[in-house]
Length: 310
Image 1 (cartoon, rainbow, N blue to C red):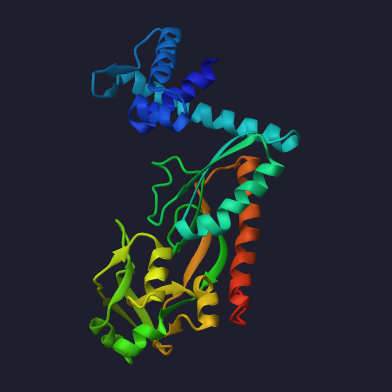
Image 2: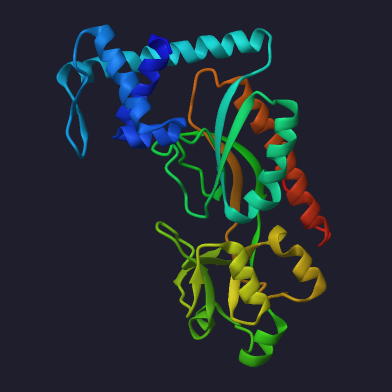
């Protein structure tokens, strides 16, 4: 490895806070990370870290070096990307995150399609309903369903997603259908709950008025597909994107409740940290995911005779 690669390893160790965390991110052992940073220190003729058995801490020289090297590494990445744009197959790796359900049904197939066209780019896909820290987790690209109006990242809108409250006919027969938003307090609400989740508060709109309700239920989960299964089993009322339950609504295994009081829509979007010149592979994957995402949503909505809002 050369100086630039050793500097990259050093910078990743600083960002991750330990050699072992940097090693996991770079797919190398902590011992290799330590040896490469030691080699870098020998080249520079100074100590960059103070090491203890439990943690690493930058020296004053190390902190100064880090503050300067990040700009150099960014310039190198832009130069490499510029060369790739001029010709030659893109190389490198791409770390992607998406919600569990969409990850399985949409992003997974996109990865195989992309890899067939770009075999020199490795994909690391992490599926989680909770919103990962893109910077802290080293995520390059995320598919998210959320309010992104104040996002500091680059946002590529896939679709506006309408949501509804629904339940199984068996649940409605056993417990009755809520007539007003306040009636939800007397029902079992199936909630998507994880650290930072806001979906235990339902904002429902009736005409021009919107109300936020802190509803509750006996069971909750951090996987949206499990909530759908529970709703189908008659366990309660769930809020779902229309396209995700279009087939069940068509079959009648789920029915909409309170159609005159609907949850506020959300946005399905691709987001990634701002860069002056994103690597070509990142943009290519984003383009493919954008097209596939719109097609997937439109296909599911087509089962209900709805149109995708562009």
